[in-house]
Image 1: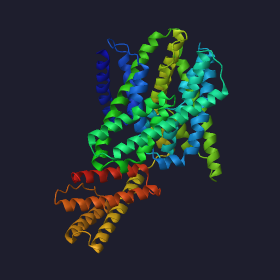
Image 2: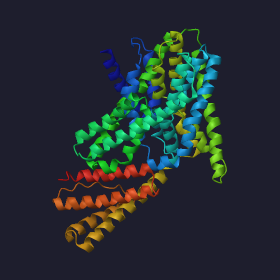
Image 3: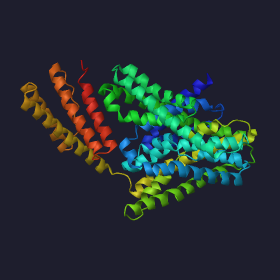
Image 4: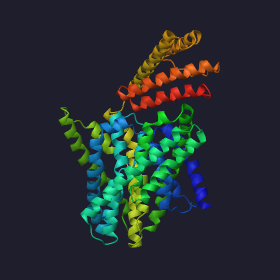
Length: 515
C-alpha cells in the first residue's frame, strides 16, 4: 500500500512541477529531480528504495520505445558514422577514465571502480530525449545526440558484465569470449527487435480496432525487451530497433483516427512513467545518503566523477567534430560540438544498471556505488538540464521560430497545391461529380489563401454525403503522399512532417468513420 501511495504522490507532484516547469521554461525532468530531493528530506516521508525490476522491466521499455519512435530513419542514416564512434569509443574511454579516477578518490577497489565507470559510461536516451524536446535543434544534431544515447547502451552493458566478472566474481577476461558476448548482445538485440517489429506490423496492418492496436503498441516494447533478455541479447537494443522500424511505418499500418488515439495514450504513459522515475531518482537520494558513512566525502567524489565524464566527452567530441569538418572542407567550429558535449545527461539506464549489481561485495561498497551513480545522475540532470537551453541559445545552433514557421507554411502551401492538382485530375477524367469537385476546390482555394496570408488553418468537419467524405479523404491522401515525398527528398524536417501529419490526421478524423 505504501508503494501505491508513493506513486500517486509522485504523479501529483509531477503534475504540479510540470506546470511550473512550463512557466519557468525549464526542463521538467530536472525540476522533478529537485522536487524529489526536497520531498525526500521532509519529515515523515518514508525511505524509498527502488528495485531493479521496477526500473528495468516496468519503466524502461515504453520510455525507450517512445524515444526510438521519435528518431527518423532518414536522419539516423545521415549520422550513423559519428554515432558508431561515440557509441563504442567514447563509452569505453569514459568507463576506463572514470574507473581510474574512482579508484583514486574513493575507497572502492579497482574492480568495483570499473563497475561504476561502466554504469555511468553511456548517456541516457530517456533523459536526453526529455531534455531535448524543448529545443529546436537542427535535425542532424538532434538525431546525433538522440541516436548516440539510444545505441551506446549495448557497449555499456557489455563493459558492465565484464566488470562484474572481473571485479566481483574475481574471474579472468577472455577477449574471444568478450567479443562473442558483444556479438550476442548486439546481434540478439537487433534480431529480436526486427522480429518483434515485423510481428507487430503484421498484426496492426490487419486490424482497425483502436483498442486492440493500442494494446499491441503498449505490449510491443515489453515483448522486445523480455525476449531479447531471454536469449541473452540486449533488451535495450531490441526495444530501440523495434521502435525505429515501427516509427517509419506508422502511416502505413494505422488509420488517422488510431494514430491520434495512440499519440494521446503514449503521451499519457510517457508523462506518468517519466514523472515517477525522475521523481524517484531525487526521492531516494536522501535515503542513500543516510546509509553511507558520514565520513565519506561522497559529494566531492560525485562532483569529480561528473566533471571527469564531461571532460572525457569534450576531449572526444571536439576532435571528432574538427576531423569531420576538415574532411568536408570547412573550418572547425565550436558551437555544435559544445551542444553535443553538454547534452550527455545520465538518467534511467545507469540507475537500472547500478540497481542490478549483485551484493557480493561489502555492503558499504555497494551502497557507495549506488549513491555515487544516483548523485552523478542528479548532477547531470540538474546542471546540464537547467543550462542546456541557454547554451543552445548562446551558440545560435537552434532553429529560429521564424525558420520553423516558414518551413511549416512552405510545406503546407505545397500540400495544398498537390490537393488542387488532384482535384484538377478528377475534373478532367470526370471520376467524381462535378459539383463535389468544385465545392472541394473552393475549400482548398480558401485554405491556400489562409496559408499564404499566415492565418490559422481551420479544421473542417464535413458531415455531408458519404461520396463527399470519400472524395475529401482522397484529396487528404494526395496531400499525405506529397508530404511523404517532401520528407524523403529532405525538403522538410521530421518535426515539420509530424506537425503537418497531425493536421491531416485531425482533418481525416473529423470526417468520421470510413464505412
